[in-house]
Length: 243
Image (cartoon, one colour):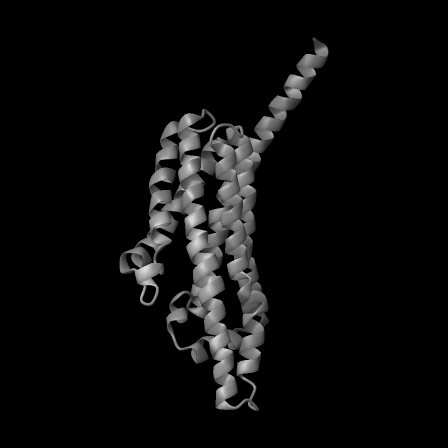
């Protein structure tokens, strides 16, 4: 009897601790993401700067120095926080039913986000330095610009944005369903996840197929607003888990 009581108390404390940890991470993650995004917008005019000529992007990046690189590294950690939050939330919800599958997509969403953003930490600095080398001929400089554009399309648009939006959207939908089916969180908190997730999945087609060259205007306009709503949803779940 005493041993069973100790096991119950240990399991109960672990459950409470996981809920609290998940709540803290779900609060910190969107705050961290939006704070670093705002600093990048201020220091680098991101993401608007990406619509400018490649030469200007690389020159502005080089002018930002090591502080800008560290800022991109800090922004990359948003993906790690998403992975941590997805795993802890899965544990808090009980890893039952649809939740394990949701956790897999949450980990994938954070991973592809990190892979996409790491190009600004290790690839773009080298390209920016090389592009500014006065000994380069115009043709050699154009090669560097072409490499940057190729990496941006693949790692930025393809991996970071398309897969990032897609996996984040699927995770949000599945977690929303898990919340609705479970008891760890109020049922009403599940529905925003389903709706926001569906929007992110649709928005992941911004540069897909017929939209590859110019992009899908509706998707491009919706994604920023969807991420604001997504951040508020994470905060709400985090607060509910701690309360």
